[in-house]
Length: 238
Image (cartoon, rainbow, N blue to C red):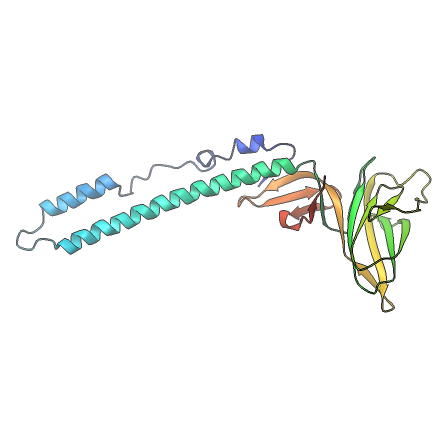
């Protein structure tokens, strides 16, 4: 695997198949010239009393043509695979430093930064409660969002205030100097039919680096979250 931390240029320079897997000459392969020489020799030395049938000769030519076409197809596919991996690496280099939103219950709050969160609210839910804790489990803040309609609930939190669906709430952290930068856990819950239900959350995180697998697959290494697959990204943030 190859990890891209800032730019994909150095990685792309190493993506040549010739550098990674140098092809050695195959002395035991039957090339076109050798095949034709073999066919001519076969014709010159055949039994005059029992010459080779035209159908047999044509069948041998057809067989050689099929093998040659398959070999070319394999070479073209290898070239395509190499181009695909190089293209994936180029895409990976553009992701480093960007913010993405992925399903998670924890993420990192950077100094002067904002954490975005997306929550799926079920129908007939009651008051929505957000508990924010440290990695060690210590509760640092609790926010009541009230009763919200079913659908997606979007929050933006900077450690001091919180914005819900574009509206700044009349709420401020109880921490004297605001919540310091660090990794925090978000537990969002509500009550449905009298039962407490934990709601799924998707949180924003910064892409610290991208790992490109040998098969061209991308793994994003996110601040405060860890490694996630490219397919797990719910949203690319501005």
